[in-house]
Length: 276
Ligand SMILES: C[S@@+](CC[C@H](N)C(=O)[O-])C[C@H]1O[C@@H](n2cnc3c(N)ncnc32)[C@H](O)[C@@H]1O
Picture 1 (cartoon, protein in one colour):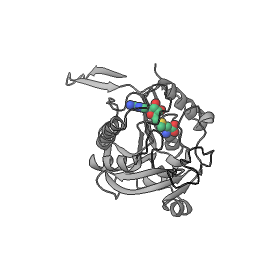
Picture 2 (cartoon, rainbow, N blue to C red):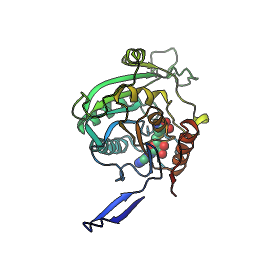
Picture 3 (cartoon, rainbow, N blue to C red):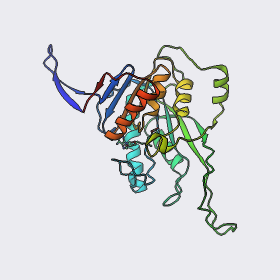
Picture 4 (cartoon, rainbow, N blue to C red):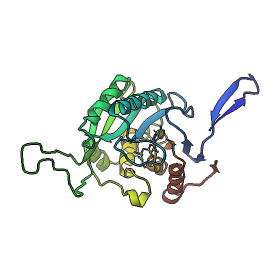
């Protein structure tokens, strides 16, 4: 919600966006990420997000069935905006599918990675997240025949990018990762289960283990974390529980309210303002 205020000294107009929720270290904006002016440029140490995948998920507000071309255009816009908001030594953990199997095969992981590089992001590596999803498979293509079999990898990827310098020089310089965590997580195949939609009450939550690992591996204590599509607020909970500042945007009011409830229940956060 942008409001216009007047600077008493200079008499200049200042547009300020009021957070939907704010509490110690956490800011939530109910807004369209493409339009929001809430986040200052070059202020973010790490972006962690899983954007809409364009696989016809029934979100409350967002339409998740664009043509592939339109989806890639939307992707280009939001990834370019992320670049502007990140510090020069800031990083980006982008959780996306490897492939698109529904409604025509697409190399969505590769296509989005290319877009990120085209918008200025530098490539560091790709983490394979093995969800161990052995749920019922129905799409075999031509079962037991070479005529047209389907290959489906039960994994997602986390593309690790950075803005200008991989070596991190800003921030507290205080890391809180253990030796065992560092050794395990720098192996780029991560094995942990997905999150239950039913338990969380959102169609596509990721498990808290995903942002927790990214935060401890790639940021210092006190750093600024942004999730431009926070959904049920998982990244913000991980930020709060690991003593980082979390900012999140979601276009949908119900999801903002869900994230606030989760922050109160799972992170025991105090509510200091909740605006309509
Ligand atoms: C894949 S979900 C994120 C799930 C999240 N990682 C979690 O753990 O719950 C994507 C979210 O993006 C939101 N969204 C879609 N378009 C948006 C936009 N233009 N600006 C902000 N949020 C948007 C949707 O409402 C949805 O909650």
